[in-house]
Length: 583
Image (cartoon, helix red, strand yellow):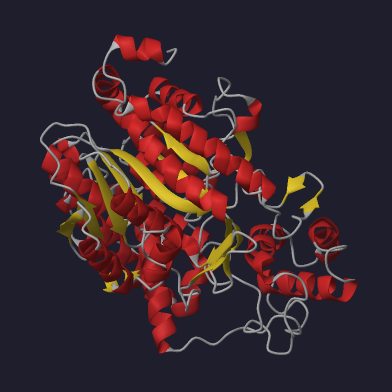
């Protein structure tokens, strides 16, 4: 079945909250499609958080690959769709993350995929909870008694301008040797033309063994690969280069050749990691080269705008220090903290300002310019620094929009970050109804649960202070009273550590460090009311301590697993194969 038809058939919603999927239309369509077309893949595991398809159950102690493609969508996408322009050779659709869902279905329907590969469609990636990813890892890990190699699929704005077929992001491994080995294998899988770029996890990641053209400017943004990394799994994100608005009905654009090349490259990557079908590699390389050339011959939908220092897409990560992979509170870019309004302003559109007639330019750049550039600059400036903000941020607008429109956009972004600074003229606050408040609370609860996992049960005081520092404004929107805030954070902390306790046996069996070190104490003793004058360590200091602690334990706990994997089932099974790949 052609990719175009697959995408059209699964253009349906899949929505979730902390309790799991509550809309499974897209998942049901995938299951039905596989059954009707006679795919060897069938639903082998299902619960409220994940649907996993495979040819058979994982075998004990055998190497396996978990291909993870989150199925949940943000609320900003109200009408999932996929279109194909045959003349312009472009796909357009709400492809976060339906695009990679479709790629998985295409492989399960059309390609010879090894028996030890499992496709998981998960919930709660968009909130950062990654509950589905956790359930998928548990199922494959418990069934096989061995951690799988995890490939998380998502969309990206990296690599689009260079006609790359895919990007590798969030590259993580249990040893630097394995990480280097994976990337060299991927490099060797290219033909005469370059098919991918690597987006580093940290600015100081050593990828000196790669040609410079293979290293992108940006840093990894949070997705399921980061979650798998936290579970000490070998993992990376395999992303589809796109252009447009990821989190709205405006949709994303993908060149036809790139989309087809992405699917073919994913199959090749599976073959390489699994050390199978070496005789097929040359044919795949040739096909990829042809698709890359076709992509290069396909005109871009529009000329990408650049400001000094690079495109706004590729320079996105440079605004954050240290870890760059953070939509959800990992590197100073927290989804609900003051550093990022991305959770509730996915796009600048008429709904944000009824008196404004919308963008006069291309609507697909809404998310990139407003969210990733203007908003983040404005949040890091004081309310009396508009002129400085306009001078710095205006580079991305003036010359691309007329001056009046650019001024309106800049004022809106700045007042959004500093409410009332212009008397509410440009950005009117939105009233949330009861359902929206409940949804907002659920997402915030999940965000804080992830945040709480970085603290031991004895760290309540520190968690409480840090949570208010990072999430205070978001919490106040639903709980203005201090007692309500205290009760809310107490519930988050208590429930998070209860869940961690329930998973402790499974974590220990796979060498995953438990964050719960003490049994619960009486809640009244555990949660004393906070003294407003109580001084705590700064959030940045605390985060640095946690990163150092995690790094130490990470390598200590994973070294045996890394050595075993490196010497046995990781891609190449003996020295001869290593020699064949020049390693």
